[in-house]
Image (cartoon, rainbow, N blue to C red):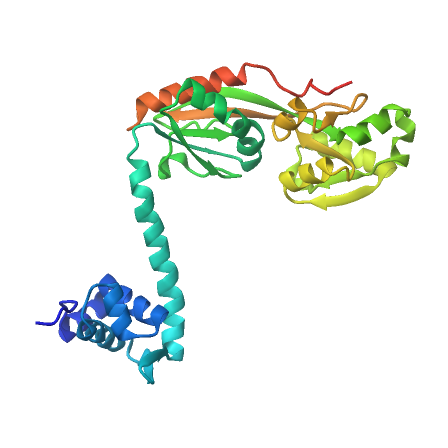
Amino acid sequence: MPEHDGLSAEEVSEQAGASRLPSLRLLAGFEAAARIGSFSRAAESLHLSQSAISHQIQQLEEFVGQPLFHRVGRGVELTFAGEMLQQSVGRALETLRRGLDRIAVYTDPGLVALVGPAFLLQGWLQPRLAALRAAHPDIVPLLSIDESPGQADEIDLDLLISPRPLSLDGWEDARWLRDEWLFVCAPALAEELAGLPFERHHELARLVCLERARLPDAAEAETQRLLRRFGVAAIYDDAQLARDAALRGHGIACLSSLAVDEDLREGRLHALAGYPRLPGAQWWLSRPESALRTEAMERMHAWLSSAAREGPASAIGAD
């Protein structure tokens, strides 16, 4: 008996009317044949007989109501309808494969899922992960960036870094890091500026700017004031791009101390003396009161709280 999907024409028709989604086995057979260009080779890759693949394609064509392949020599080519379907099916199957691949990771008892803004995870947390591993080698942080966290109770996470308390039932909020916005530049430019009075700094440098929506009010007001004297070198809608421009010596940038924490510590950027230090967000660290991975989550929460008390790097490099 040849292998086949196990669906009769009546079942395929009934399935179409009920959900408008064909069997996953039909889609997998179609995707293999479309990708390889041969029913027989697609059958080999799926460990099926050619007649089984042919039967699956026939059922899928009945489902969509039009042909998906036409014969070319010993192989097959997609029709226009087949090309359209291949795009959707390919993306869907790849998403499913990635999801299945991640299941094994999520079973690790040391996994802790943390959601926070990209600039903070990259600029403050990433440089400290070696210290986390040294203190807790069994913890596996799963870091997810989210510039504007949504409802934490609707997604699977253990810890959330947010500019405001969640104030949700079942969640515990704690003040964590206080941000500060600094005017920074590359060491060579900082050295040149140090030899001049502030009134002449505009002769050597312009401002690397973030879009207004990316700045807190105080930093935006001060940046606009300085722009009248300095002029603008470039404008970015991403903090990491503005940081990169400052690192390359393109000008003076007003950036979050958390985004450039490691750069200040290692001397890649300098906080300029005589320029204001401006208040930024109060960041909060939130966690559910109960979780499947409570023990690992508790230890990472404690570590994050302790690391935040080490003190900011914003004073480093300030002359």
